[in-house]
Length: 317
Image (tube, rainbow, N blue to C red):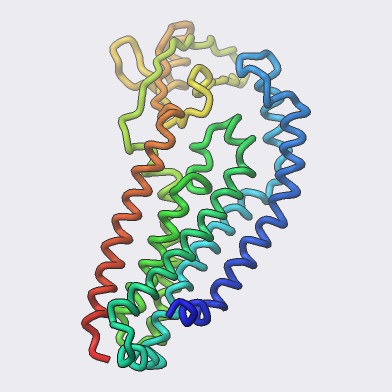
């Protein structure tokens, strides 16, 4: 049974290996180069309060190629599409009617289902875990400077949970479709659409509000505008926050606690002191947020997998 599952999933596994190998061939040389630069600039041992730390950090971050962010995002989408493809062999069994032969042999229907689902889940977990290890190593120096929140969905345990969820969605769509061939196509299309729609929300929206943000209040002296000249106003957002914090919101309030417009207040009350308020998530909450999101995806996956199991077990041939 295990050998059959391996044979039926060979194409999908080869695709997954090509994705990981291509990503490693691109990121490993660049990662070694960036790690060498990180150490040569002294950032690995320099204190964040050092005078040159901010300038050197910016120099290091600017050394990353501009196309890197797009490649990282595309590679993540490709990984999740691969996990959707892992459900294809199960769905194709119904199209080709080969499941009938297995169910008439000594293999019970429940054992057949558990083996098929277990193989797909194991492959999804292994490949996504390898992806997380590679991305965690590559993004390590960057996370040291800017915080892991900036790459929340590229490393940690969230990609593993999302990969399992993608497999579960593809399987559920395929199993519930009346025509298996249509179900395979629909499953992959649904997963691609879900991944494309979900990633921006997950990276920018939900992690900001899992726990109530902390608040940092600092005085801000309003500059006096120069007549006939354009006024350049520098606002330092998060300058006094712990390194790696995730800024949720930034605004200004007056002495009464009312929100004020900075430009209008400069023109009406130059020289006065107002307060700058920054809502932020501290860096020590990173793994708590990872756990919350992972549990949510694993929970949704369990529901979908149990539903697919129930449908397959009661299917009439």
